[in-house]
Length: 365
Image 1 (cartoon, rainbow, N blue to C red):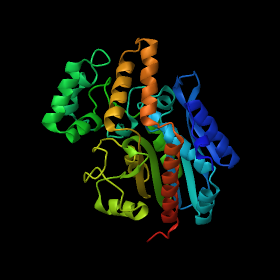
Image 2 (spheres, rainbow, N blue to C red; image 1 turned 180 degrees about the vertical axis):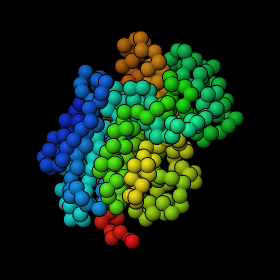
Image 3 (spheres, rainbow, N blue to C red; image 1 turned 90 degrees about the vertical axis):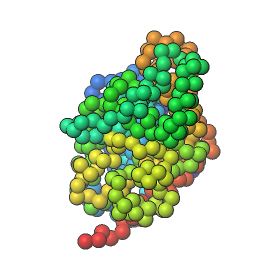
């Protein structure tokens, strides 16, 4: 298989490849069109889904992409490649496992090269109980004006202030403060919002319809930006529960990491989307990971994110600066090289085959 050919250079191209591959497999395809926003090329935006296999299968493998918009180049390419992979799909059919591919949970961010959605909301911080007091992040509040200064690039004294903060508190504390999630600065980074987003509601509806009738749900959510180049870290996605962590390691190996015990490259975060499965599918055994692929050192990805967030807050920035920031944002979260794409798909394929094996196993009663 020519893996590289299944990856794309834009949301429009990615969606076309996904739909063409799903159609060739005669998958059941359905979509939810964005109710208000258009894409960077003026295109219609949508969350597209393709399901293969018996709709009454007891086990469902859910593969989701573009939770963080611009990271969708990786996840979409993996989904399209899987739709061309005769061996993987034949194994799912043999095992009696249904496969559901959710393409572009955040189509706005995918098209506009943002991690966040049309409301500047990070979808993987948006799944909190909005009827309860929202999580507080005082450390982020302290950092916010220095992360996003009035002008870009930041002045030397601004960066010196951030460096001094890191030296006093440590790099892990800095990462946790910035990326853990915050709900007080709508113009800030890793903002979780004040209400459920359209993508949140759409995902919940999909889970109720497609996953809640099943006995088992295996879920792989594709991400990029943390860890060594090309390495797919399998990050446990679930509640802080030792039994569930152990089951996840049984599925995908002892190298599964968790931010609960500090073994993951990710900081502990609030409002992650996997919690929706517990709400919407309470009788379904859910086993989930975020498959997080490294691109470049964290300093570069975070700097690209800062610049893009600054640009969002300053929409009248010069066109040349806008183009440079957007290009760096895409490049920071998608390594546009064939060797990286091959590493991505090899690990995605392996993770899917492992999940199919576990989903096909007899259910203990």
